[in-house]
Image (spheres, rainbow over the protein chains, first blue to last red):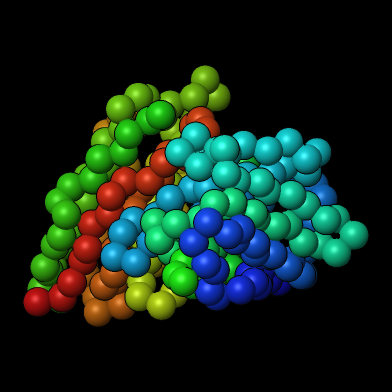
Length: 118
Length: 112
């Protein structure tokens, strides 16, 4: 059974870089049948797609964050990562990693809360 | 970007009664292969989003058949035929036709 687990600091200072890793177990990591994504939910707000990475390394980002976001993959470790630079309080959120098939997001990590505060 | 608009913002439903949530997209989600790239998710407090419906009307594994999705193009509906206590949470529609993937603002369902 596929399992995704986010990890990384829970507290980041303003203007610094947020870095999270999603470790995947129990399933195929490199396949054209799916891709990997980061999605976040600020406190009291809705869900926001951050970006995705495909098996061939191709990435797509939300234009609202594009200049600050990088998603990368390490197939040797079955991990993919998120970096958000120059964070502000508006980046405080629960961050989820997920795997999308051709049709949906059936698999999600448990989520990790990242707070941006000095 | 495709804008997703949900209504109502919230619902208070008596157990056993039906509930319906509307989701409208600013562009058609119908692809040339005949699929509508519209998902429905349920977000419960402290839990990850749970997939309910994909391709507009296909029920995800483990989702009870009292939950159904319908619609095509720009207008979609999620229906719960008989609301149960476990259905409380915030429901989101999401379009996956094109990047950026976008979510509706959410509909909060509570039990009376």
